[in-house]
Length: 57
Image (tube, rainbow, N blue to C red; front, side, top):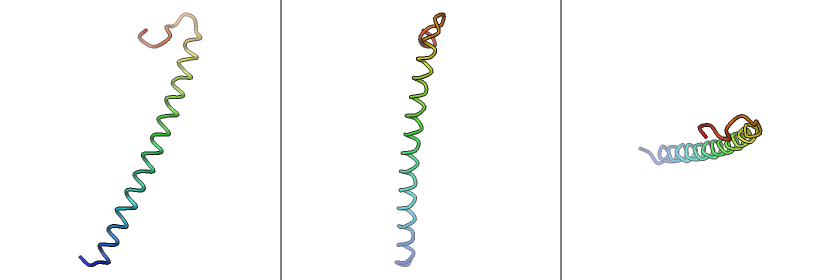
């Protein structure tokens, strides 16, 4: 393998790592948004008098 090929491979690996980290961050943000939405829905459900506060309660 030539030094040029090695440099290209390292460049590709670094790009893949960066893309993976960006994806992890985005998924973390998505999960946080979903958790917030679940809390909002649980609060709305708890305001309905004849239902238990949480499913299975």
